[in-house]
Structures are given as structure tokens and as C-alpha cells.
Picture 1 (cartoon, rainbow, N blue to C red):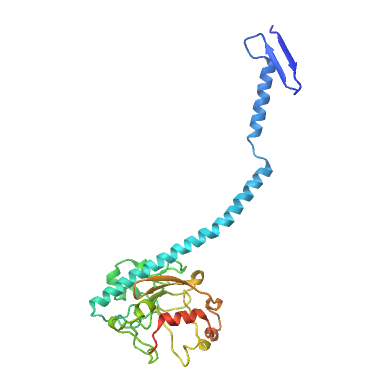
Picture 2: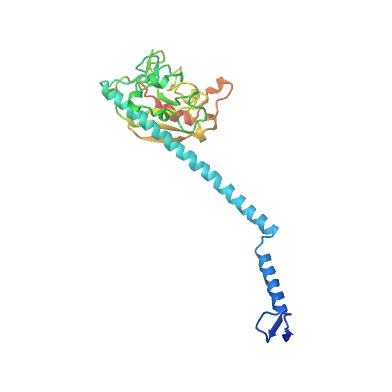
Length: 280
């Protein structure tokens, strides 16, 4: 029989000695206690789990808006890249047609988007299609939610660059360009060729309709530009592009009462007018 000697220390720990080669019952017991304590320490308490969940929730609330902004910024860059492809196709058309500009609106086959109201086959009928092939995504901004079958084109061309066929909206108050050579002075860097258009406003032309006193701040009328995250993409005649952010809250969603199109002293409309037309 093995002789077991044991002492109890001040810390209540049992020290066991044995003159036998194998483990004693006390040593086996202490080993089981240590394993139980070790196993217990590996588990999370309820409080620790709740704290971890709270930290994750706080980090998510901080990161998700930034991720959403980054995603929308990437869509804006893609929209401007789509506009660049359309611009290059437009330029090729102009070069191959002796400097004559395609119409911005109308029913002619020489209109950049014939009919202009996203009818079936509008892209197939466009004179720019030959330069773009099957790249159908360039005709749309990636921020829009409507399906391509409903809205195949949401880019709009400045009505002063090419005018219309018929030209019922042309006026003596502003310059309508029909040939590339007529675009002079500061116009290449000031006038935009293309902009994305909001989903609820039909048409593939961006048009200001001059009326009596239309260019006076007290008579400004909102042409309802795109408002994806309070901004719109513009591509200019000199080849540069920008995403312009709207400042006036009235430039937001289209109101149900169209009389509110008139928005005196709206600085956004002032910016649009300056970059859309050249006064005679």
C-alpha cells in the first residue's frame, strides 16, 4: 500500500507527496479540478457577449454609411465613364459628317435618340449605335433603379447642341449650334453635352424653354435635373466631366403641382442656365 503524505498551506492548496511511482488519488482529483477550472474559463459570460455585440453594432453603424457613400461615388464615376463613351461616339459621328451635329431631339434618323421618349428600339435607331456596338450599359446611369426594358436611356443631350428636328423649341434668345465649328470662345469648357436624367422625367433631351424673362433670377424655372444623392453628372464639350452637387432643397423631387417649377433665386438653376445656353 502506498504511503501518502499531505500538508495544507496558508493558501488552502493541498501539496501531496508520494513514495509511489504512479499518481495518487489526490493527484487525480486535483487534475480533474484544474481541468474543470480551465474549461470554465474558456466560455464567455452573458455580459461579455452583450458587450461584444454592442461594439459590433457601433462599428457597423459607423462603417455602413461610409460604404454606401463609396458605392454611390463609384456609380457616379461609372456614369461619367458612360458619358465619355457616348461623347466619343458623338465626336466620331461629327467627324464623319463634315462637322454637322446630330440633332438633340426630334424624329429624324439623324437625331441622337430618335423620338426621345425611350420607345422600344430607341438605341437601335440611334446614329451613334454604330460606334458603340452592343455596349448597352453606356446609355444608362448605374444609379437608376428602373429596368433597362422600361428605361433603356437615361442620358440627356443639351438641346442647344444640335437643336431639334423639327426645331419648334428654337428661339432667337439663345444660340443653337448645328455645326461643330460654331462652338467657340468659352463654350467648349462651359457648355455641357450630356447629363444623366432623373427617372420620373421622360425624354432624352435636356431642354430649357425660354419664355419672357426666363433668365432673370426672379423667374427661374426648374428643368428637373438628376438628383441621385443630391447631385448629377455632366459631360462637357471640351471632354471634361464633373459630378455637380445641388445646394437648393427645391432642386429635389418633382412636386405634384407643376406650378412650383418656378423657383425664384434658385442658385442651382442659375448654374444650369449658365452651363446650358449661350445668350445671343
